[in-house]
Length: 198
Image (tube, rainbow, N blue to C red; front, side):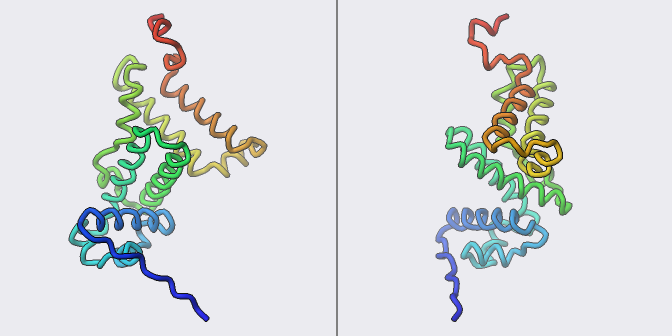
């Protein structure tokens, strides 16, 4: 006896269709990569006619770009809302995996994604901690690289550096401390307002 999986309910209206397509695309791209995922597959998993995917997104490359934009906006929204760390971690992991797969498959991610709201939010928060915009931008880039590296390569990093004895919480704390050191080398965040003039 075989069990048939029922298709998801069809979304109704442009906003619902777009949301369903972006959610399905993100999950499929994380699992298989954009190159191995067809528009028909995204349509099927989102409960949408594939013609609507073409109508609202255009080509496969445009869908990849829209998905990257969507994931970036989602992370920024969660950060601004001060959502739970679990929700933020899940969103960051999904974004990181999709971005990494797209990059490794040769998609020009920097051309497809035109806004970077999570990085913009980080820059807004750390700009005053640096002497010039250039050093703030470098600090943000280094912090993002550190986070991406750990998010994507944690098992390798833990094994190769002999850190298997550390708990997940200890690793997160160490990553946070290193990230804070990158974005705030003089530790101005940790000092009170009266101390910041020093």
